[in-house]
Amino acid sequence: MSRGLSSTSLPQLAELQALVALGGAHLQERVVCEVAAGDGRYPVHVVTLGNPSPDVPAIGFFGGVHGLERIGAEVVLAFLRSLVMRLPWDGVLHRQLESVRLVFMPLVNPAGMARGTRANARGVDLMRNAPVDAVAHVPFLIGGQRLSAGLPWYRGVAGAPMEVESQALCQVVDDELLSRSFSMAVDCHSGFGLRDRIWFPHAHTAEPIAHLPELLALKAILDQTHTHHRYVLEPQSRQYLAHGDLWDHLYLRALAERPGHTFLPLTLEMGSWLWVKKNPRQLFSRHGIFNPLIEHRQQRVLRRHVGWLDFMARAACSYRRWVPLDEDARAALRAQAFAHWYNAWA
Ligand SMILES: [Zn+2]
Image 1 (cartoon, rainbow, N blue to C red):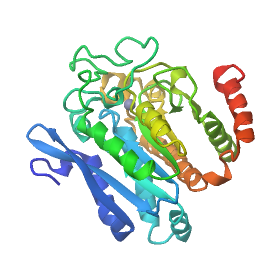
Image 2 (spheres, helix red, strand yellow):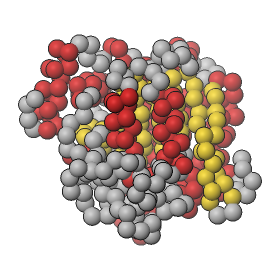
Image 3 (tube, rainbow, N blue to C red):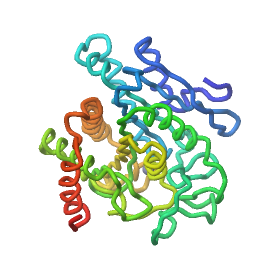
């Protein structure tokens, strides 16, 4: 813990550090960057467990990119907690960990979380901060803007290096995920709409991504396994286009630099308007629009999404059993995916 700030000022950071201590020798932890906030500094931790071999697939769980969306960090921490508590007794978990690498970065933007802001301490929205521009019209402000750090969705100065938190996240993806032949990422957010949505790229264009067949195959096993799940899996571009999306940036870079690699980055957008609808007083709290404020609802939200994160870890571990294996299978899935998500045939 850095001088100047105690982890008690950020309960999610205290929880992460407690889980690292509980996990002991079963997991590895490192600080990938430190973020200045006021007079002190916050560490950004990465926790890894499972097989470190480059021959096994990997999945990364990210949270707290938007500081105000505490529930995103809490969902990732709740999943990590369930794994850590199973380590002493669950032999099936240990079998799973022989075949997969799990990567956790639950608090990407600790300064934003401590301040209760979407942006980092410098006023930059990390999810609008990557060097990728939308190719068509984006909605005013929300699609990303360079007018002022005093307004939301600020991208940062054009041409400037990415923020330290964004750079740290990219480095973790490079080192831990893209170094393997198959990887996925799940980045947990809240605040959009009534439904729980799972978004995949692109955010900068309505053009479909290259790995559409793999995503439809993932949707199929999710639908088959969790018959009554409430998630809408879709390209983000179906909702709105945005500049500077980190996952578009990382996906495009993986495609260009590691052509043999399959990298599927997903963003969970928990539908917080439902929590507001059930408890309208939340509208008058800044946190209330982005987080469940009633304890039983918070527990229900955590339970539901921890179940999905566990599904994703299993899917990563066993990807060879569900990804399309040859070009004929990919072509068939691509045609179905076009019809499902883009109302057109390839
Ligand atoms: Zn968000």
